[in-house]
Every structure is written in structure tokens, then in C-alpha cells.
Image (cartoon, rainbow, N blue to C red; front, side, top):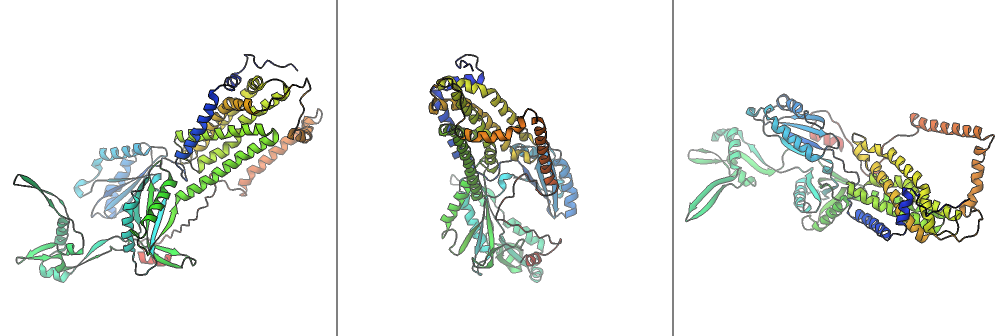
Length: 612
């Protein structure tokens, strides 16, 4: 066999790249930059449980005081649906009519940016104000946008084992905690749900009202006038302007009871003279309990829940940990000693657990590949492949961060999914260099590497482009699953391109430094050694019948028939119900939700009795 001149200029693109970078001083700098960029991406990339998706929704609340459900539906809800459905990018519009209020839910298509969607919504409302019957008392619409980041990442339930503690006491503690938790960096909204609320209860006495000659309408009008504030003007005296303000607002039952509702016989009639005034809670709209198992002291106690959402782009793990640390700091100060705080939701902890588990699997897959290369080629070749894989993963993480992806279970799955493909380029290059050493003993690595890389460069590039062509169309899937699963095709495609670049640039440089040169030993043909020598008899027994001159064609037809039969059997598995088809595996969450649908008009107390 003649030995080709590896220094000849008739090299392809891959061979010329390998010849240029195998001895270039910039190659280690490029490898170092790739490693540092990957470490930077690991530190700054937000970690979340799910990918970030633009699913913009908004509640448009249109108050219509005093109107019945039928009037709200006919005069507000139905015309509003027709107006809002004219916007571009609308998925659907739904409305709920209530006494005195219409609530319209507008959902935009997946992928419409929230800022653009809200601008369209506000412009549509402003351009079509004529559909609101203002002369009948319809007020300005209120827009409350909702998105994926409005899902709470932390829920804290406050309860007290003492039977004397009420939900109203817990609600006051929760409102005090809101102020502190909103100071945590990265939090977006902190709300208290399940609390009874606070109200000044006024129970009018018809007999005393008749004696004082006061009507219920007069009471309402006087209360509204008394509970108002504003700037009344300035008093200028002594070259000084003193601002006069009306107020303050009514603060407690004593202030409300002292409101003058009428003047009879030159004497004021106070509200407390004609009604009972007390500080309490409004009629119950919800009941909330926190149950404990027998191990924790079985029982059900009144409770309220604090929910915390995070800002877009923030690290869910850091925000959740910071909220937990702030809660611990508030104990025995804002949070009384006998009030307990149970973390009923912590998506930061679950996101961290899933990220760590996937990273462990990613490392395991990498180590497994390196171990196989070690057994097949040797420790030096395994070290080169391992270094190339690590560089590919790190620079792919940086590219993923630059693209705008977060570190979540889908993006990490994309790396695990593509690890078998990412190592192919480096393995093919290293294996062919290893083969050329056996074919051309006595040649230096600098002479062997360009020709070895060039020999497999074309097929490697073609294989990379083929895999990208198979994966990339998945990024253009419409609907909710398109953006949700987009990290898989995009990250895998970027990883393939970067893996190819590292295989042609860094791998030849590492091979020149780390691989051991083979001394010249004459024209003795290369013999299989190591694992190749042990596996050669096995492969001869497997492939020998398929390549036999007389029986090979028939054996190949049998093999093709067996493969087609197995494919048909695999297709029948989901048809027969033996395999369930799902986009994602079942999520192992320690959450259980029970929804009880009671008949319309069922009192709250009856529903509570059924649940308990």
C-alpha cells in the first residue's frame, strides 16, 4: 500500500482546519474560553422547573354597579367579546357575568410577547369605548395581565394550633409578612389568600331610624362622603400657604359610629344612635383549614396562605431560598411564637432537585462514553474524547443561555438526549487518527492528523447536517408544545455544530499532544490488538453469514424480514394499549387536588360540611 503525502495541499476543509489548529497557539486559548463561557453560563443561567413560554392572558374587569346578571351579559359581556375577538393573535375570549360586574378572559396565542399583547389590548379598549353604555353607570375597564410567571413558586400556610386563634388574627400576621417578603430580590407579587378580610359592620335599627327620621339612602350617602379624602385648597396667611386636606379616612368602628348622618332639632344624629357598629369580618366567602397527620398532631386548624411569584428571568431556586431565609428571620418578631408556617409549595426546591438529578445523569452518560472509548482505544484517546465532550457541553450551555433558555428539565434533557450524538464527532476523529498511526508507522502525529481528519471530515459534516435536519423542524411546531419543547431541537442542533467545530479544532491539538507516536517497524501490516482483537471473532461470526458469497443474499433478506416484524410489533404496542404515549413522563409531585362540584346555590357552610 502506498503512503499518501499527508503534507500535500489537496486537503479538504476539515483537513485544512485540523492542519491549521493542531499546532496553533490560539487553540488552547479557544478551549479555555469555551470552558470559562460554560462555567459562566452555569452560574448565571436561571434554574426553573419548566421552560419559559409566552402564554399571555388578561382579565378585563368591567364594573357595572347595580346591574343584574342578565343586564351585564346583554349590555357589557356580549359586546365586549365581539370587540376583543377582533385583535390579532387572539386564541379565544371568554366572559363571566356577575351581579354588577363582567369579567372577560382574553388569551393570546402561544408565542405572542406579553408587552405586544397588552399594547394591543389597551389600544382595542381605547378605540372601542363606544360599546360601553356610560350613561347607565358602566365604569372604566380594569386590565389585569396574567402570564406563566404569575404561577406562585412558593406557598406558605400560616396556622395556629390554639383554638383561640382565629383566621382574622392569622390574616393580620400574613399582611405584615407581605411587606417583608416583597423586599426579597426577585419576588414579583406576594398575596394572602383564604383570609376572611376586615369590615366595619353596620346593623341598622329600623325603629331608631324611624324615630330620627333617617332613611337608609341617607346613611349610605353620608358614609361615602365621610370616607373621602382630598386637597381642599390653601389658606394664605402671614406670607405662608397652608394646605388644607379633607380627611382622614375612617379607620375603625369608633370613627364610623361617629359619622353624623342627620341633624334633627338642632342636634346631630350619629350613626351609632341608629345602628350597631362593630369591627369584624364580612360574610364568609371561603373557609380554609390546614390539616396535620397523626404523626404531627392530628387536627384541622384555621389557616391562611401566602403566595409568592417571581419576576421573569429570575432564578426560581435563589428566590425560593431567599424567601425561606426571610421567613426564618421574621420568626418571633413579625411572626408570633405560637404561629406556625408550613411550606405547602416550593417549586424552587423541586426545580433544584430535578436539575441536579438531570446533571448527574448527564455526567453519568459522559463518563460511560469515556469508559467505552477507554476500553476500545486506550486511556489517552479516552482522555481526548472526554475533554472534547466536556468542552462541547460547556459551550453548548453558554449558547443556550445566549439564546434565552433557562436551565430546566427540558433543556437538560436535550443535552442528555444529544450526548450520544455529540461524542460521535470526537470519537470518529480520534479513532481515525488511531487507525492512521497503525497504517503509517514512523510518521509524526503532525503529519498524520490532517489527512486522518480530512478522510472522515466529509462524512462527519454530512452526518451532523443530517441530524440537524431531522431535529430542527421540531422547533417550528405550533401551539403550546412548540415553545415548550423547543430547547430540545435548538440545544441539540447548536451542540452538534459546536461538537463538529471542537472535533476539527481542539481534538487534533489534543491528539498531537497526548497521543503516543507509533515507531516505525517496517511494512508489517497492522494487526488488531486489545479489545478489537477480542471482539474480532464475534463480529466475524455475526457478519460472516450476511456477507457469504452464496447464502449472503438470503440471510440478508431474513434479517430484513425480522427487522420489519419487530417494527410492526412495536407499532402495535400502543394500539393494543400495552404502551401509553405521552409527551412528558408523569411528574412525581407530592400534591393532590380534590375538586368537589356542588349544585349551584349551595351555601358555603354545606360545601364545608361535605368536604370535612
